[in-house]
Length: 155
Ligand SMILES: [Zn+2]
Image (cartoon, rainbow, N blue to C red; front, top):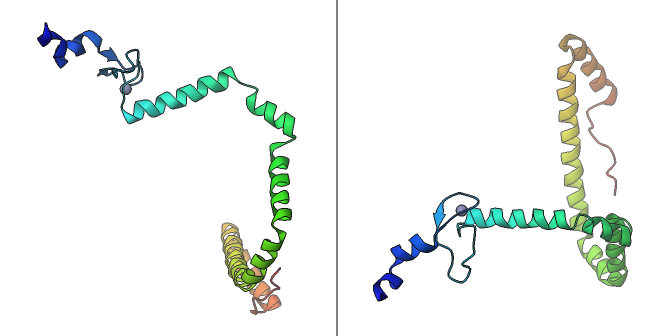
């Protein structure tokens, strides 16, 4: 009697189930005897996804409802950040002053990379076209614009 109850083997034969997700045999947790999904991470993750899907199916209007109530979700976010900036305007002013130089050099670097990328894109596009024609075009362009490569940095 005692032997039978304490034996894992006997218990598993009596209470084991097949996982609904991986279809493997498993022993339900003793606190959740009606468990239908094994405790492997993959199956538990899948279970969560399934639950979310079920929940969304049961509450199809939940997200739309929120959007309808608050106006568009984006507007809500914009409003929120506007309010935050209003509330923290002094802090932001200080922050901007302190970071102006850093920001400026950051923007300079950013624009440099941006122009580089644009140039590379342009070259790639030109290479796509007929090579013979484009070569003349390149010479003309370089002659016309010079090699200063400058341009104002928008700030
Ligand atoms: Zn499983």
